[in-house]
Image (cartoon, helix red, strand yellow):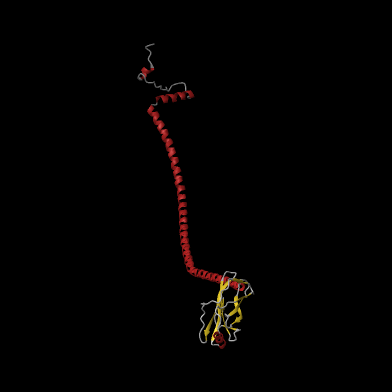
Length: 304
């Protein structure tokens, strides 16, 4: 049994190495198809026989294929994007050109608007002067109208006052007496011809004998009497009788009768109307040579 030769010794296969089976040409039995178990065993034997380096290379190759596929996909995607981007760029360029044209048109329109505004400002400036002149003239007219209206109102008020005020004046002289041995006397008749009372009537009266050919000077050196303040109602007649203190002599009376001297009677009074306005009046007359009548002087008979 020990002398029987072993197959490994016959073919010279080194100890420890798996023996390689060599099919004989005259093998009578045909090879059977590999079963699934045999294939699995073969793969297992292959995996066992592959070194770690070989397995790493396979994994790297697979990874490289995957990376290449991904790179190819990215490349085609970028190519597509570039193509589409080219179209979009063309569209953007067209849109930019359109916007540039629109901007140019807008700039031109803005320039035209500025020109129109400048023309409008010039027109307004040119038309402002006539307008200002018209306004100034209108203001002057308004001031004139206001002044005229004010004057008209004042005139109306003054007319109303004049129409309703008191009007006091001397209308007559009575009881004239120039007799020897007695003071000269006479009565001055006042009346109010207005429509309202004359208030606070007061004044003075006097007389003066002036030689023929001399001018009368209205002085009040010897008043013939100053009446008390009084009120004269409308249409009322009031008599005031001043007198001298010195009795008349025969020479004096005869001089008046002959006309060598003139005996003057005059006076001045003031009063207020119901509108509190002060009025003045003066009067003057002289005795005729008949010693009973009088004549108004050519001056000093005034009233306001």
